[in-house]
Length: 185
Length: 76
Image (tube, rainbow over all chains, first blue to last red; front, side):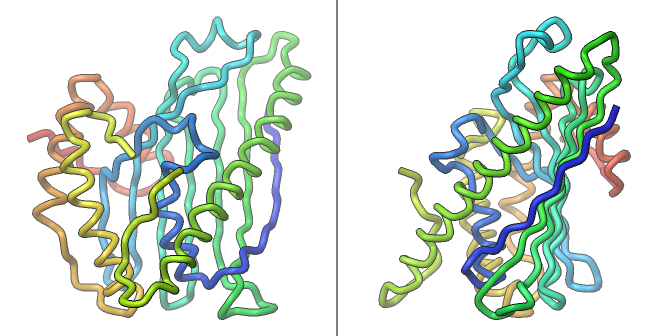
């Protein structure tokens, strides 16, 4: 079965700052479940687009009914992104590579300038696809899990980004500002 | 944020400091010439060593094919 959810949100920050926050978003107070992040591949292509692959380890929140399929309460996520400063577009696709037999959760985030105020506002389209081969009467459980998981992760992702963006904005006002990653609380 | 391999975390921070500076001061301003390559290679070798110990390389390779881009494991 497949479930699909989508949401759009505008950040009141310029696109370039939002992309900086994307790299700095972990750790943040809304992502205590993120245990590690690593860049495993990165290059700029001939068109000036930056491609990055990151490996993210998250502490799982496995529902009781799924524990027999997911023995380890940790999951590796692969995140592939590309950033094109010429078109001011950033796309990130992430997918779990652990526990795939039980469920695959694929999240796509697309960041573009908001048409209403392209220099100060950034629009993110957040899409999540849940794919599961578990049948056997679990359909309604998977469905409600997916729905809850989507609401939870989209709001945490938004709050985390907003937190980092605020820190970046504060820093940019300081005299002699030189880029430094913000410290998480 | 930590690296998946505890012994790689310091290398990761050194690389990220370099990358963040490059990203904001060069890349976003249109200068795409690469930087921080030595730091990245050191950090990445450390991460791949950890992943190899955890038998993760094949899993990652397979996943990357599904998502789409080419992947060359480096395990030195």
